[in-house]
Amino acid sequence: MTDVLLAVPGARSLADVLGGEPTALGGALARWLPSQRWFPLKSGDIHRVEVSGWCPLDPPAQTAMVLLRVEAREQEPVWLQLLLGLRRPATPAAAVTEGFRDGAAAHAFAVFVTGGTSAAGPGLRLAAAWDGEPSPLRPRPLAVEQSNSSLRLGSGCVVKLYRRVRFGPNPEVELLRYLTAAGFGGVPRLRGRGEGAAPAGTFDAWLAQEFLPRATDGWAWFQARLQRRIGGQQRLAGDSRALGALTAHLHVALSRARAEGMAPQPLDRRQLTEMAAAEADAAQSLAAKLAAAGHDAAPVARAVAALRRWRAPLGDLGLAVRVHGDYHLGQVLRSRGRWYVTDFEGEPARPLAERRALQSPLVDVAGMLRSFDYAVHVAGAGASAADPLRNSFLAAYREPAGAVAGLLPPSPALEQLLAFFELRKALYEVRYEADNRPSWVSIPLAAVARLAEGLA
Image (spheres, rainbow, N blue to C red):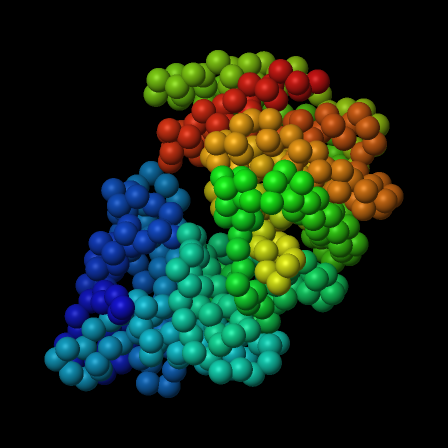
């Protein structure tokens, strides 16, 4: 269904709408944006929406990418990109549409993406790189989106448009380029990418990657089997073992990177200690927020004390490498009897520099362990059901990852670091649930209580 943003009677091209001062479009977008799942602000936070630049994607300029600068109250401006189409040009019924829901605009975007060409308009230049094979386009939007939007092209490719623009290299594009070139088979292969340039900076606009047929994300896969007891505990442990091995091979591949900003370095003990102090300060504020909202703040208060006491282990701490950064069951897909890792953008709320930083691979391990706990709680399977999943994942992970000299620290440093990263992740979850799903906050709070007690 076409999503009409603004009626523009008589407009022949988007240049008629976007030229000069498109204040009417800015006002329409200010009303429309808060209803989109990918929009990062609340409606009351918007002060002004400004079209900072735009680039036509077809000769008649009836499809264009626009770069938006959203001024927010008491926040830094947010940059977004939006695909626009023009329906029924040069008629009284002419209207600006959201391009992903407009078949003609989506097709024009797909042609541009797969053409390997470039285009420029006022304040925005786009260049498409395409490494995939030619195929029938037939663009179809995918509904399962949160922070971005995707189009399926034919049977073999998906194009993801990054809705929120972050100036600088996107970690997902960086890592998929490297992993595809390295021949790592545990990710959907990169097929193409788009680069944007504006006066404010350069950015990765989109990526195209292999489409995985009949794929199921790991969260849905484990939920179905935990709730219906499909295959029994042995089958579930087998799946978690497969994920552990896949995660290890991912980290081994990333440990071999040598490009600037990706080459591994020894994990810095001082940096870990500073991280613990910063986490303690944030947790102290979180405890006050929980208490004010009527939640049990005691587990977080105990975590504050544990983090203030904690010091990173002495000796070998393993390597800091590029990692996934937001690793959980929802970020892995099962297709054709195998598991694949997807969505390498990292935690969206964290700054881009932090998401591109070298980190201990145990950060990803901790994320998946927390995801197993969540899956078990939500499925109502009983807390003890998480233990076989966690144990089988860890056992399968440690064998290949431990075979690479220096990647992981030896015991007991490994267990101490893993407990720290898992507590850090659980505190992040408490913040998220308190802000978005207060009825779920008890799930990570239980983990915080357990992990704070065990942090050595």
